[in-house]
Length: 298
Image 1: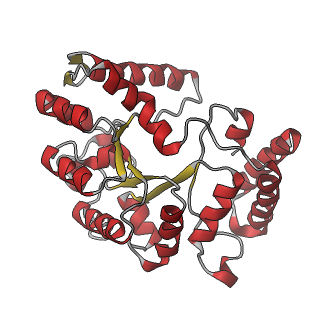
Image 2: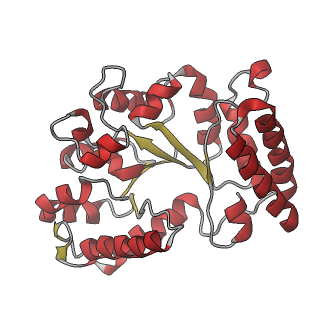
């Protein structure tokens, strides 16, 4: 929210659910109330990592757990979009195929305590059955880049959802194995595909990498030759929708306005909660710095 306050005309902010929220001891986990508070303060949507296998295990809650129902219903009833990470590349469930970086980040899911990819898909389908008009953008192409038929069937069944093309380790390599068929897919579903990067450029090296990442993605979409193999060379009107038109339709052509007074008030509650023992020393220090900067902008 501070980032949005500093650049309010070109920053969209997505809120996440808090499983250690102030007051939960008395009222329980009221996720709908959390989403309402974030929306009222000026969030542009919600972001859920709950479908990533390690996060799903850590919450101990299935994606279709009834405790989420009032939250999903609130999002659906108010047309609030959610960017949802569900599953991971299938290779992450295989110790012999998982890339080294996945193992380094503890993204190897061979332990039976992790949900399977198919279980996560079943839970997601269950959510959509109950809330079919939920406006969802599934991150990383819903990890279906190796299954063109299933990707098509999923978009056909659920007209309110989109896929983003934030690169996963496997995605663009899979696309390049069947460039002609995937080009037809991208043209057919041009209104359902959203550009994304996972860039987080807070150092000079990352800034350079982020620029190259966008260049590689554009090369794949705009030309026949790309970093992963054959590119798609999509028509200009399709590119326009993927690059910004679909995002603007789902999340808004301009960021929502922040409620600075509400933001500062809730930040004070969070800071008190952290100081009372819910946060680490580092998180308390970070919150204090954020609150000081917000106070200067209020």
